[in-house]
Image (cartoon, rainbow, N blue to C red; front, side, top):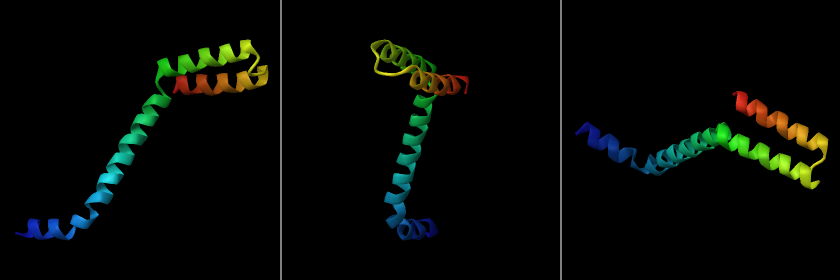
Length: 74
């Protein structure tokens, strides 16, 4: 009986708990993608191509490269 009463009393909080869970899942997925080695390597290839096309200068490329290599190392 007590479980039913507490369940009814906390029912208005259910959407908030659901939202918190969804936000946690989104955060975990974003973190996983941020540190995914194949994704990091692809971003590095894209930065190299942008450098070759003249879309990035050497300093910009080096900043991107350092960030990506840092993410790859963990």
